[in-house]
Image (tube, rainbow, N blue to C red; front, top):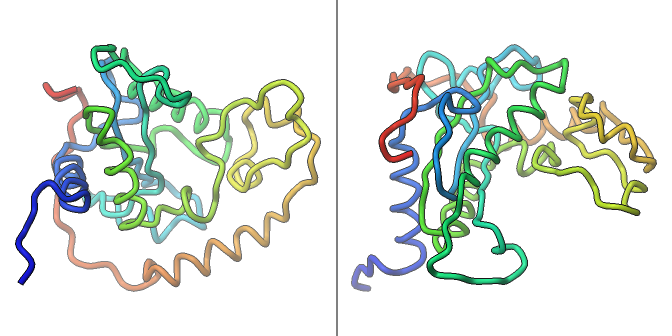
Length: 221
């Protein structure tokens, strides 16, 4: 029998995900600014018809089916710089705030229907946690209706298509400047339904397991 190694990447990732999922669900964005970088999951409880199977699994304190998983890394991480003593600022809070603004811009969605869990962790562990979360939950906005996490394109890049997410949920002002070919909304919805079926989210709900809902910010930030 192979001995258990708590420092193996898979076991490290499991411990990170376990800690994240033990956090209380909070409104999107959280009520108070907090510092740090890390990972997060976003939950939907609203009435958009195509997300009904997801919303049902998140209502009444369940929060069992994230609609999106993401990360926020310290400044410089994306360009390969490294400073062991660098302070991450409020990157995680800012990222959640950006997502709330994207939701606000879409008339088909309401920010009041979104909640999040987040975990501030050392940046070297961020990719491990995010990767396992996406693999485990297959969140629809990560694997099928992609584009929620997109930013305003840089100069000279407006010739791209609107994302799958922006096709279903138009409203972000910068998307109007994109000149690429429009996507087929019905085709996206068909793919969404097929994915939900494949994930087993169209099956009956299990009995609820209430989870604490915290409208503030936890001590750990």
